Image (cartoon, rainbow, N blue to C red; front, side):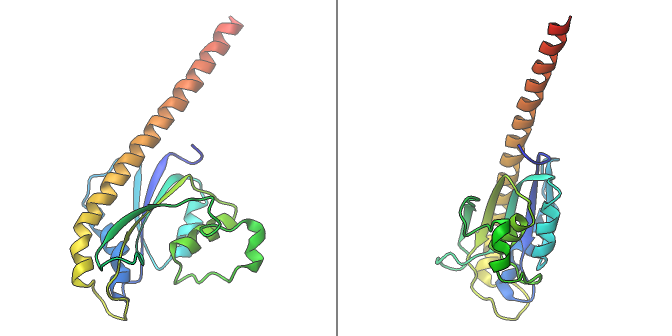
Length: 192
């Protein structure tokens, strides 16, 4: 485990572009959900650059992004994707930064957030994306009917993922603490 043993659920999207607000809507509903103490939930909206900088503190080992994604499926279809952090399509090495286009602080997609994080020297242990196929990305407020109909299921999915990842991190933390305790006990016994 490399970070602080926490999970960050981050909703991203633009509330003025119809279904792009999917992630924002889902995390808004998570405020009423019962989540493990290791889970932080935040609405990043169009502040992808802010998200990348927040991840630099190393506090989180798992990032769960919630966003509208092109899935080539009917509108309202949900998918959970595990990001392969070794895939160069998701990340840039610091040496690649000069060749990459400048980041748009108000329009960053998940790939851009992860590329920026990596280019700044940061990392995250695991990234999962809970995505929904949008129907409408025009300038308008409010989700389309198919995407609005998927929000409750998305909330249940995110809660399940957050609970599973928090439990996994708690187990890893417990194993690490037990290992350190055994090592300390051996050191005390050996010196006695």
